Image 1 (cartoon, one colour):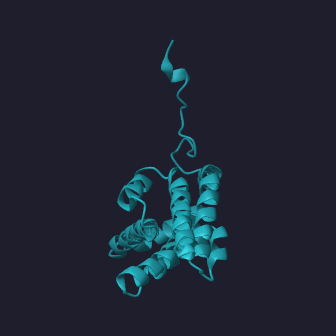
Image 2 (cartoon, helix red, strand yellow; image 1 turned 180 degrees about the vertical axis):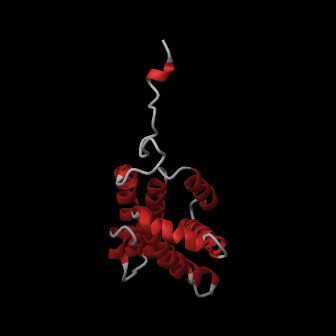
Image 3 (tube, helix red, strand yellow; image 1 turned 135 degrees about the vertical axis):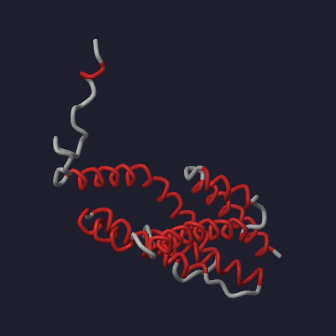
Length: 195
């Protein structure tokens, strides 16, 4: 028995001539987006709840934004900037880098969802702008992890570097580490209130 029976003669999404079948790219991207949303929803919900709790303990006015998917990055940036201002005495700008990351990510998803726009954008970025676009993406991702590190450091009891490295490698423990940070911050705040 040959394995050729199980291998399709044509790649999915392409016809016999090698041309893209209209609609196949959109269906594939929609499927990937749906799987991503289903797998990340519980993680994002737990992270949002922990960020909301931390933001409320720090009396941030924008704590409610933690429940909005892109707004949680803004709240994380505000918490990180508060840490920077309180501990280091410097004005933080991380929330603005995270805002840039939010806009860049939404733009990228919009371009990927539409293959005709993606092809136009790819041709436009193929020259000198491709390196700057990749650099903006990397800057956004790094700023997310720097903000996460500062959120962990805002609680003085946690191993912030180890938690950040664990969050870079695996995204699943991040909400649980944020909850642990929130609990430790609550202990510190309750001890300070007693004095």
